[in-house]
Image (cartoon, rainbow, N blue to C red):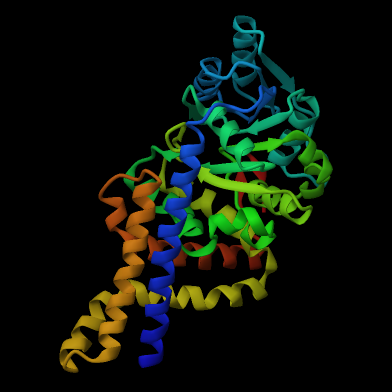
Length: 378
């Protein structure tokens, strides 16, 4: 029991210190956005859109109000069966910066979103490309602040979590993304090491230097990717390009999913992308799963054991490590903009994550996979 208590204590201290350091680093990056912009390069906003008539107009109009001027807004109508293309056509007549691209049929061996992003990249004229989703809403300084951070850090890729506006039940699933900045990546080292191990990005905000993307081989190198954002970040890292993960919640918001079921499918789809290593990756994740199970249940069991054993050393260590772990989750979820009571529901989130990892792995091994927007993605 003492060995387990040591593991939980060390994990709790690690999670707390990593979370604290990452928050401080992201605060530092936010200060960079307050300095004058060095240069005035053209930015191409690239939006893949497939059956997005409910959200596409709001997203495009958010770019028409940007404080940053040299930009074009490209929307790839990916063979939509709704009014997406017609809406983009109408907006292009309102503002000449908006341009619709009619998507090609999905080629063999390509995933849908990667195929759309590849066409957008080839049509873009900007020195920098901002890939974003059709359901995002960008504040007036979204491009300006992102460009300031990217240029100030001399990075080739900049990404960050937007503010998630979904309901509590949906965010119980979506918030598992926070584990990247709580348990995985030291963001300050991410810049220096250029390692695929520390690569991270989210497709809702991908600001990339155009020449760097071309130099890395472009989207064709990851044409069969399920997690296009993570694989793009890893591709750039492997080819020696610098990246930054930062705080964009004040500039970008998103209702990522409408229902709990949609959220499960969407996040599990991403988990399958992470589990592409098969059983080897699953075995590597097993200690993390066991740790999370201990953290979920030890607040109930360890205080009882601690009292029954006369406040034993292992009991104190277990409780301390557990609550440090919970504190880390509280800090990082508040930092990323999640509202109460979600930051207090760490044990439930941990348990949901365990179920999702197990379920997605079973679906992958059985060859069931998932569909997204009418296409099989895994």
